[in-house]
Image 1 (cartoon, one colour):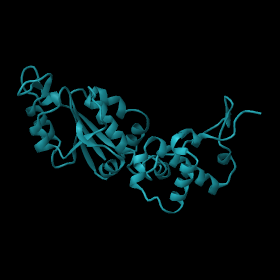
Image 2 (cartoon, one colour):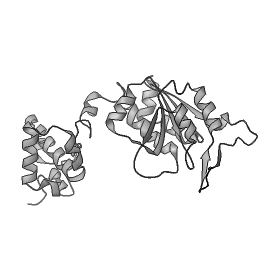
Image 3 (cartoon, helix red, strand yellow):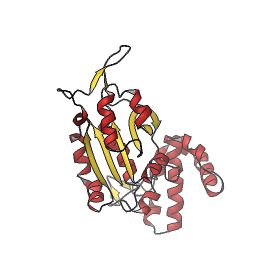
Image 4 (cartoon, one colour):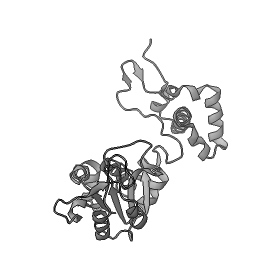
Length: 256
C-alpha cells in the first residue's frame, strides 16, 4: 500500500513511519509513504494556508487553494482520499478492513477550525472521525487511522494475531497473561496453564463475553448469540458477570 499524507506539519509524522512495526513494513515493501507539506502549494509570499471564517466565529480555517493544489498533485479524488475530522463517520474495524484493501490511500490532516467545505465536496472520498472528542492536531488523528489500517495488510502482522483481537469476532479480546505464573500473590488462571486446549478455548470465549458485557454491552447486539455463545452468555449473566469484569481474571490466589 502507498500512503500519502498531506499536512502543515509533516515532521510530526516522520518518526511514526520510521519506527517499530511500520518501519519493518516499509523495509519489506509492504508499505510506502510520502509526506506532503501543504505549505509547498501556497504561492503567496508568506505561504499562507489559513484565513478567517465567513460568517464570523473564533479560529481560522484552512484555505482551499493550497489544499486543492496539494490534493491534485496526488491524484485526488481519483484515489481513496480520507479527511480526518471529529464530524466524520466514526472509525471502526469494518471501515479499517475496507481501507486496507486499497492499493493507495491519501490522508488529509486538518488544523485550526478545519478545512474549507469546498475541498471536502470536490476532493475527499471519506470523512472519518477517530472518536467523539476534539484534537488540536489532525496529524495525531491521521496516525491513529493509518495504524488501524496498515496492520491489516497481509504480511505486516500474523493472521493468527489479527483473528483473536478485539472487534475481529465482535467481542472484546479476552484477558491475557505471561510469565511469571505468580506475581505479587496473583496467579494466572489455572485453566491457562493446564494444557487442555478445549478448556482454554471455552475460558477465553467466556472471558471475552464477561469483558464485553461489562465494558461494551452494545456490541452483543451485532453478533449471533445462539448455540455455545448463547449458553455461555446465560452462564455469565447467572453468575453476575455483567457487573464484575474482573471475573475474567479470577483464578488461583496466593493465599495459603
